[in-house]
Length: 107
Image (spheres, one colour):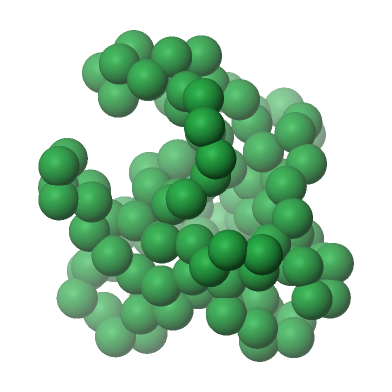
């Protein structure tokens, strides 16, 4: 599937974007497709950079205070992948990822 990169001030500041596919490290099943801007390790996922599936892509339409979104869990084996947070510097909702809970494949 082809995804269009989101190009905005965040992308321009960080550098060239890359599209990633994340899968669960425990069961190895697909989690979501994410646009990472700039170099460095993937530590957090901004909600506005998730491209698929639709239930995660549409997170910005939910309230960041929604308790159902407190954790990012694998939908297949229910292993925790991340926790909800707010990146204070930019006031953007994020999932703070748990190290070694996911695998990355560049698309």
